[in-house]
Image 1 (tube, rainbow, N blue to C red):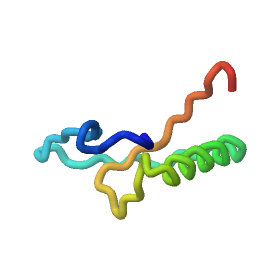
Image 2: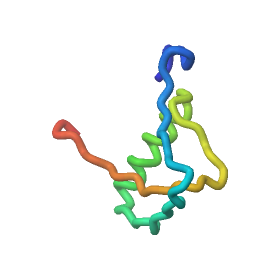
Image 3: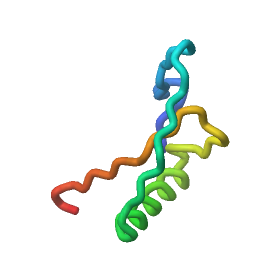
Image 4: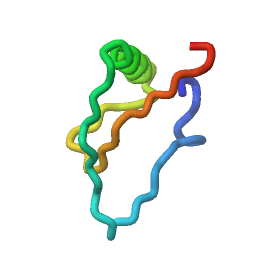
Length: 70
């Protein structure tokens, strides 16, 4: 999150090196939902909350959940 010092808070997922990586098949999304996902990802990239990884070993589909207020 913008303004948080990574030396204080940093998220990581501990993985077991003995477990092989899993790759999931790409799921298709509705075009209007795909546009919202793209906008949100671009916003997170712009503020530095996420970063692009090249050739990740673990891949999972994005699961969007719409809030009650839209």
